[in-house]
Length: 352
Image (cartoon, rainbow, N blue to C red; front, side, top):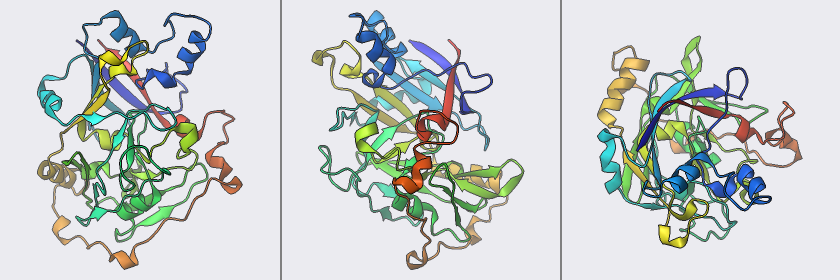
């Protein structure tokens, strides 16, 4: 068993950044592809593949736990390989969610959300309709979900992001040149949503649904579940998925990923890869923590203004991937990477 602590720092790789450890399936590794094209061995395999290849008795899975330290950008957590943390052993008894290889042959840590499997702030299901034409897995009202610790803010379809935040009294949408923008809501407004995978409910902590817009202003909070950029939702380029559940979601679950035959050089006898999620957010405790953090310990949520009627909900402006929005594909920093690969978090191994 290997356990490492992980500090996650928001940024673009400048200053003290040492690098990142890729935890995704090796099929998308540019290094591995380049090495394999000139070398028949697996010298270019990602770290986790190398670990699994060198010790075949090690179970082919990793598990990730992210702390919720505060409303700041620095986060920490623990990554274990081949075993799970003692407090979260129940994850191994959770439903095994199929890890998908999509119709373009692209591998992410991706699975299917239940049909209409997001419960909105009003307690009702949000209608989910996949953006993938003729999906080979699931139904048309099931989202294809990718899990990624490299995203501070989960990426959603526009209609879902609007359904979460567009009915909050006083909400307004902030447009940006380098992304589709975000919702701004009062920091003291408590929201509650949940996700369903294989009929299991995963509540989201209200502190994970918004974050202070700046360190000097705790009145206005930025939405953490944000509209996905057209440059990211380019299925043929990046894979057939609808939403990316990053840190604001992952702090609410203990995530186990079994690599199965996704390991480079493995064969079909290894087994199919799968994902398991253990809910670690208790709604009652989460409410108490929200009151302490955002309301100074005085619970005024019982008198907070009701969500505005659905007929009066606000909607964010439509964004397309045409030439008028080329900044989403080519940001102004001369990087040849799409913005979603640059605007992310960087994970450091803190110890072993």
